[in-house]
Image (cartoon, rainbow, N blue to C red):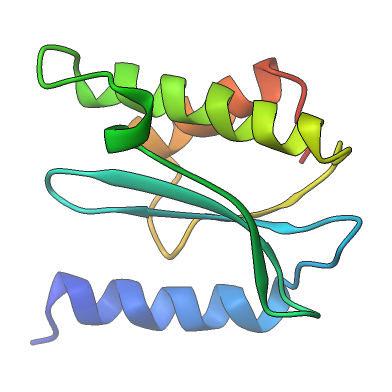
Length: 116
């Protein structure tokens, strides 16, 4: 029997084989653990992180729910992209299902003007 983590990593490898970020359209990569949520804008051509955000940075605090913190991170990463002149990204959900905080993050980023 394979663990949830092993299955997620296998899904992520399949996704990464198809998703590639460039300078004009970077990859928006997300990772969630049991306690935290992270997002990065990555240019895979130059192997450079263009922007990053996490729940520690947006200061949602422990009093806010994980979904509320994901919304704050989505808005923050979209603001960073706007400052760098990025309007379109490629979404890399990291092998996680598109539900819960991943979906809330994506909708918040789209609502803040990021296209994907």
